[in-house]
Amino acid sequence: MDIRGRSFEAFLEEVKAFHGYPAPGVLLGGKMIETAYRHLPPEGIFDVLCETPKCLPDAVQLLTPCTFGNGWLTVVNVGRFALTFYEKEGGKGIRVFVDPQKLEPVPELKAWFLKLKPKQEQDTRLLLSQIREKGSEILRVQEVQVAQDLLVRKRRGLLGVCPACGEGYPLADGPRCRVCSGTVSLYR
Amino acid sequence: MDIRGRSFEAFLEEVKAFHGYPAPGVLLGGKMIETAYRHLPPEGIFDVLCETPKCLPDAVQLLTPCTFGNGWLTVVNVGRFALTFYEKEGGKGIRVFVDPQKLEPVPELKAWFLKLKPKQEQDTRLLLSQIREKGSEILRVQEVQVAQDLLVRKRRGLLGVCPACGEGYPLADGPRCRVCSGTVSLYR
Image (cartoon, rainbow over all chains, first blue to last red; front, side, top):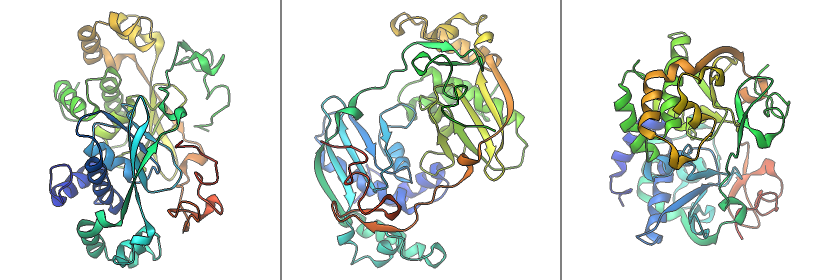
C-alpha cells in the first residue's frame, strides 16, 4: 500500500528530512492518513483534528494541505493516537485510530505502541517493517461528527498595543496582553 | 538578506508548497528566524517557543529542525507575533518580536500587522515587497530566560487501554481517557 502516491521508503525519507528521524509514530501516521483518504469522498476539502501532539501532526503536515500554522490542522491533546478528517463547515468526518486489540500479530509494534519495553530494547528495524507491512491492519475507521466548538474559526478580533510590553496583542484579552497581565508565564 | 541560505523568492515558493499560499505572516517569520540565528551562537541545539499559532509556526517548521510533531517547537497562544530560540536544558534564549513603533515607514505592513484595514483592501504585492525589503527592520531582539515549566519535557508515562473506548491512553489521565471521562469534548 502506497502512502498518498509515494512508496513507504520515499515517505520515510521525507519524514527524516522534516521530523529529524524516521519516527515510528510519523510512519504509522502515514498509514492512518492513507486509510482515511480511502474512506473520504474524492472531492472535498477537509480539516484535520489530531488527538495527540506526538508525531502524528507531522504526518498530517507532510501528506495533506493542513499545517499547524495555516489553521487547517487542530491538535487537541487527549493522548489517543487518532486523527479525524472532517468537513470544516458541517463537521462530518472520518476518524482513524489504532485498535489495541489488533496488535497481537505484531508484537514489536504492540510493545512500542503500548510502551511495554524501554526504547533501548526496541528492535527498530523490525518495528518499522511491521509498520510498513501491517500498519494498516491495526487501524479502525469510524464516522464521526466533530463538536461544534471545534468548528468555529477563532478570529483574533481587533488588535491593540499592550501598554506594558509595547507589542501587538488581541484586545479581547483585556487591557494588557496575556503575558503582561500574568495570565500566562513564559519567561523568568 | 537571505533567509537561512536561500533567497526570499525561494523561501516564498517553499511557503506556497507547505502553507498553501504565500502568507505574509510566514514570510515575515522567515525574517524573524534569520534575525534570531544571527544572534545565536553558531553551535548549539535550540528549541523554539512560538507565541502565536498563526503562520509563525510554519516558518519555524520550514527553516529549523523544530516541528510541532517532534516536540522541539512549542506553541503557547498569547497572541503576540514573537518567537524564542532557547537552550532546551537551561532555557537561555533569544526572542525576536515585531515592534509596532517601527512600523511607520512601512504603512502597508503596518496596516496588515495591526489589522487596520480589511483584507480585500490589502495591496498584497506591496505588502510582500515591504516584508522582503524592510521586514528585518521592524523587529527587535531580546535575551530571555524561558520559564521552568516550559523546559520540562512532558512524558506520557504508562499507557493503558480505556475501558470505555478501548483505545490506548495515558493512565495518568485517570480510569478513563479524557474524552470518555467527559473532560474534553471532541465529537457529538
